[in-house]
Length: 448
Ligand code: F6P
Ligand code: MG
Image (cartoon, rainbow, N blue to C red):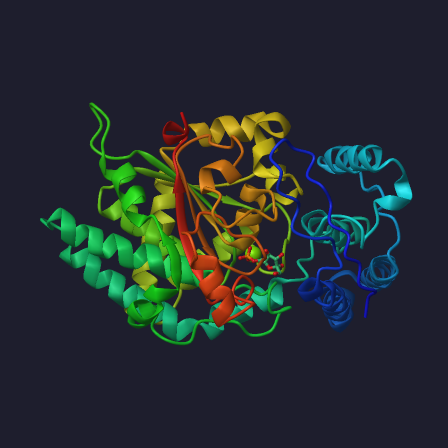
């Protein structure tokens, strides 16, 4: 157990909310060492696989990696200073610059330690250090320690995937000549399925089973009261308003979150956007190394599509084949950028990753999935719940954007008067249980 530390850091920004918490934040402090212990365990359990694949060299790499990770766990549990990275990867300098800036702000290196630094930073840093520990030890550098969990949840969600693909087949067959309001009904259902898909992440459950077992469509109406903010109509108007000379919204970018069932819900929603003609192109953004236990990497993305295509279920395999075609034809494309696996808040994107910012400016709508994206969008600050979503973005607005997020961390903006108080009286942990969700939209135009 770690010592409690109530330090809350002042935001280095003009708006006055504080960052949500230090690493000592109660629900988190036990989860991070648990995740790290599981990582060590997974590498150790796979020793024989490394031996078979690489011989003695593989075993040596396993030992060295475990030794670095055990050291990391000790640093974390005893509140040691955050260390600079040593792996000389393309993002190493950016990470070390971030640390240096933080040390300068705090006045000394000791103060930037595990318990005293913002949770968002140290949590991201832990995943980057896991990546470093593996990277420094070829031949196992590319080993994805979270792969087992990600594939397991995909298979555990099979029933739900089958019923979703069957439902979507019905939608696809019914699509021609539909009235706008009927199309909106389908749009809304699939948007909500993608929203609730975000319940299934492995980071919040420290890797335990968190898969979807029941039909996602059947649960939608009972889940409706748990959507605290629902801007779906604004998203719909963005997609359907049409610009002169353009029949559809053009391009939607989806900043993905978790692999497994959530990714399937995102792919089905993306398929709907294309096959309905609402959108002509989709860019998916994933992570360039294993991140927050279940986040999608390029490998997970390809694997999920291949696996769905190979399924022994008519409508699953039909969907998988369609997705593969979209990729081949360039209607869909997968992208990654080092910025997504850095600790920056998104209001810093324009300065820190101008190329990515410019790319997102080319989208007509950017959909952000999940809790971590929400924390980065809002800077993980202790906002008054009635501050508007637009204000909490603090100038971030490459394009109209929408976040689909189930609540797992202590930050929530854009609520009505009295809404938060009512929720707190019913359940003081309403912001961290994953039971509630938001669909929040902002357009840079409405900020002008
Ligand atoms: O609550 C623990 C946590 O790791 C948060 O840091 C993070 O916000 C969340 O889980 C991950 O959730 P998601 O996959 O929805 O981003
Ligand atoms: Mg995630």
